[in-house]
Length: 135
Image (cartoon, rainbow, N blue to C red; front, side, top):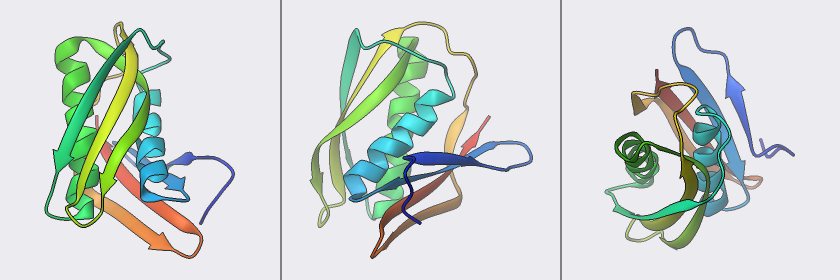
């Protein structure tokens, strides 16, 4: 499962699906954000925002964190290029993450981060997160 590349896009008929990897959950979440951001095109890092998310479980935490960043990009008319987990509390299913980007128009539009085909998996090789983006 663990690969050299931090994420890969998977075949899907209508939407965009990817898997992101990491040695830790935090790294896999950062790589998931990077995969999602790459759909919008390249961006600089003149802007930043911090997100604090708490959820009932790790799957909800993953989707809600990406969804919050997506909503912020949409309303702020900016594109993020990178995210960094500042704090992660596995017991509370809570994360504080900072995203960096710039104001510009996205190359493509993503409507939502979905729970459809969602996977958050941990094994001896590390973490894998599969996300389906509704476009």
